[in-house]
Length: 85
Image (cartoon, rainbow, N blue to C red; front, side, top):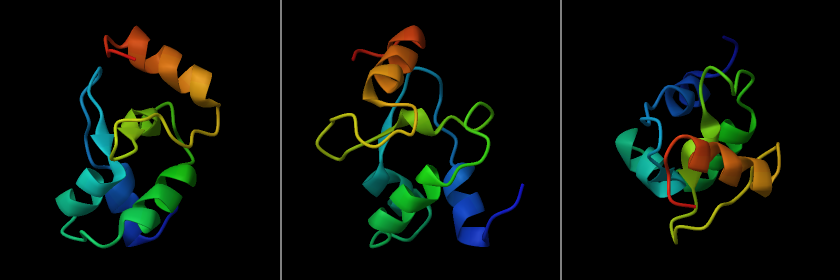
């Protein structure tokens, strides 16, 4: 899996099926609380979204944000996993 150490750290933050986390929560989990935008960019560069499901990362206000497959697909995936979107 090609990517910087930071990107790999962002990609490998485990989020269980049906659960979500904000970009801010992801950054805090990496002990990089101020790196919220960098976590967003890292998720956007995820080369294997099927294996590492970046659709589980949402905005800090709970909204569905940025997904290469489109927001409706992101919503569908989260609902499919049992989420409430």
